Length: 231
Image (cartoon, rainbow, N blue to C red; front, side, top):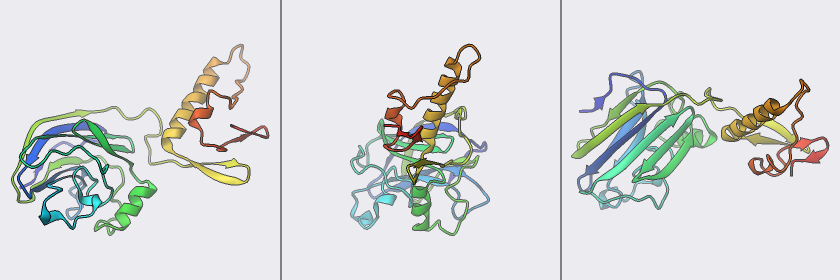
C-alpha cells in the first residue's frame, strides 16, 4: 500500500534514490491532502519510459513529470530499470522544482497559467483546488509494481522572503500596451527598489533611475519612465 507521512509540510526539499523493475511504474506524491482521495496530490512520476507497455503515454506522464500536468525536459538523464536514479523535489513558496540525477528537469509555478492549462487537459480538471499551494503530506505510492527506495532525506525550508502568497501579476504600462511581470522578476525588482531606498542619504527621498543596472532584469519596453523607455 501507499506510505504517507504523519506530518505535513509547506516548504521543503525531498531527495531519494530509487529503481524500478522492467515495465515498472511508481511515483512520489507531495502537497497531499486526505480530503481529496481521488487526486490526493501532485506526483513526481517514476516509470520505465522506454517500455513498449507505456509507448502511448504522453510527455506529461514520463519520468520526472508533474504527472498528467507538465512534462519534464526531453533530454532528462534517466537510468534504465534495474539501475538506481537520484531524484529531488524542492517546494518553496509557489515555485516547485523536479530534479533527476543532479539535473533540474522541470520548474513550475503553482497557480500559473501553464499549470492551469495542464490541469484543464488532465483527469484532475474536476478538482478546483488542484494545483494550488497547500500544506500537505508526502506519499510513496504503490502502483502494484516492485520499486526500491533508499537514502530518503527530507528537510523543511524557510518561506521565501517576498511574495510567498499566491502568484502575483503586476501590470505596468509600456507606451499603451500592458505588460505582465512574473513573480521572480517582481522579487528582483523589489530588491532593487529597497537597495535604492537604503542608499539614499540626508533624509532626501531616493530617486530610482531605470539605468543600466536594472535594465538586464527588465523585459524590453517593460517600463516607461519620465517619457523614456527603460532600455
